[in-house]
Length: 300
Image (cartoon, rainbow, N blue to C red; front, top):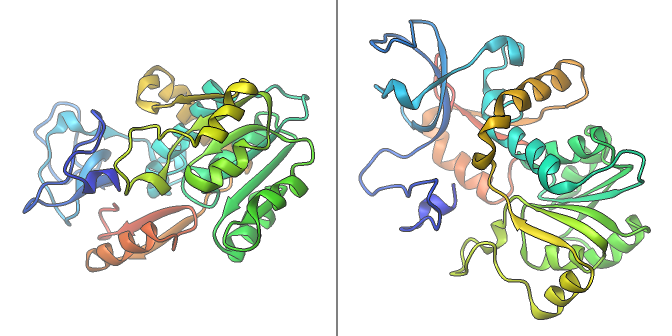
């Protein structure tokens, strides 16, 4: 979403917002009328390009029908844990994390209280990590990670020295790093990663205001550590794994229904509050996925 605010998003899979056009984003709604062969009145549908408005006419080819039973009727979960953020966390860990159960691996997650991070830490545990440490920006978020989501420990990067706290909380070093932020925090984590460890490059939000390539280059000293310790750091794009989406959604839904995957949202009501909600999300005001309910019929 931050990249879409630039004239050039820097990617070929998301388009920039256009001046004088309705802003859009991931959304879910209910079909009121349809001339498309795949949809009938009452169907629930999702789109990555849902306009921020209460009613809209959309091209049916841009929509995907979803089954409310997968989320026990919590439709907004299709925008988060049982949707693209959940798939990003799950497939990213499966494809780039190289977790082996029983190997006493330690995972660190930055942006750990956000939509992807809050899921990634739980999935790390479910897939076999023996220790999961989250990094976030408030004491409230730290407590939430450890008391509600099962993280073994959490670091508030705004308090104290991150590197020192990580050394204390990850005595065996770091084997898997789910990176949402980049920058100084990631430099501190990479410096404590073990030989042949792995970085899951989910996002680099600290760098999006800068004119740098993606993924952003590491400082020379950190890059030297990465190469010396043979740490993998490859660009990860979930849209390259569409063949795994169906099985991934079923796995996430199963974990949710079994109580193994806890889902947290920050929900704000009303289209008139969309701007404030978006700004709050960009400054870390949310825990879990930021959701805005536009009307009783439609959620975005």
